[in-house]
Length: 397
Image: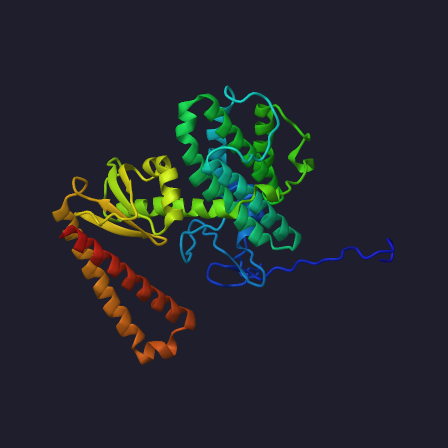
């Protein structure tokens, strides 16, 4: 104020106390601090920045786990693995796109998708515009943790786990379809890099430069001075996003149920789906190819009037009934034995936990969070026991 005649800043951001993995405040006297240069050497600057950002929630202390060789730590979890793993995920997605894109897409502008294409294409465009608004609002209001989580979930789950997996058959098919989905994916990824750039400046610059080089468009010499993405409300379709969530839920339910019943990955199953309503029925019928490919399904029956087939295990996806026919996929005797052992293990755990929660000595001495953890474990085990009992019942039919 004395020399400039103005206040130096108008806003102050205050984060919580930084603690180690056992809750001690990080300090020089305890020697439990973390040297950021050491983290940069082992994980990279982007991993350091993102990891700190994503764990720093407003109004809460920051807990950092950074086990070093020879030191006893609460666990082997390293906080900065979060950012490093995210960098690897982004890089692998970029490689998938760029390894296919060069010979199939003519030079042109990099855009964040369009309203054309199949359900998956329109969905990822809607989601990108949706999260663009959320990330922008979070950054403007200093909710850096929320912004980090939003862009993380979008890139890792929506873009990588779902959209890129959904377009692989069209990439393999070649032709105009391949060019379309690759350009759509490249545009979305380029836009996502711009949203992520304030948090992870180095990998985003590298990827953005490569995308713009391959696609022949450079709206700016650097991502740092490129225009911030603006959400197009006309491309946000909440009903379409709901349809996609219904489809994803069904695929996830089939995958999870197959895994829980030890169905070999290479074996395709026959599946019967009984939709709860006309909307779900339409979603499943219109997108059979996604279900067949992503859920490893051989024959798919979608019928609102269908009955449960014999030798099948049941699952629930939202309100839709799902039945996976197990005959020919697993050894029923071996699976019954395995499930029975798991039921016995769960039953014994439930008895022990119930006894602990009825013990007045434990309830009076244990911290509230420990008691709550035990109750949560009990609830989860009871639900798991119901599921296991239903599975073994299905095997005996």
